Length: 250
Image (cartoon, rainbow, N blue to C red; front, side, top):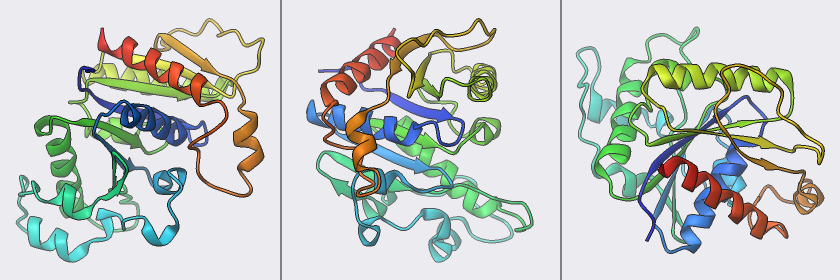
């Protein structure tokens, strides 16, 4: 039996963090673990990566205005709303995986986001702190979630990067902000790396845990399916999941 952990996956947009979130969750589910996958990205693509048709993906909590008003209120809001019933109520069961679509806050030009933000943070805190199940949070691209401090209670952070200077610089910023929140356990994964890849000497990067090469079976299906499951390279991805979990369990 593996030690239950709560993990967050972060990185620059387009680096494959959602795919890695699914691969980690799928590996754990096939080991008999109960896993919550939380989509906290503006792209809301975690359900698609699991192979769900759009009609079966739960609507994001951020759009549930009546529920937000009921639990948090308006004006004088409740900062600690009751959310214990919401995970099962709002999630989609996919085998041993539980998909919960939260979305994220975009305040620019949209007025105050205090009420939805309070409910999102309360629900995420409930899953991370009170549930004795695996939780893997797919964060929005960049560093916004870390800047708001919404995931400081997770056990470990997986930082995903492509083999490019811009992507690695984002990884450094993510790692630095995470450390300010006390997130010391970090793992760096380089995705879509060429065979001759060598990590450049850049100060501030998290410890390199693994390198994922381009996956031919994923490339071949991308125009036909959004699912990243059941790839021909699954054994290799399982080995990567084992390395990540071992690195963050220390």
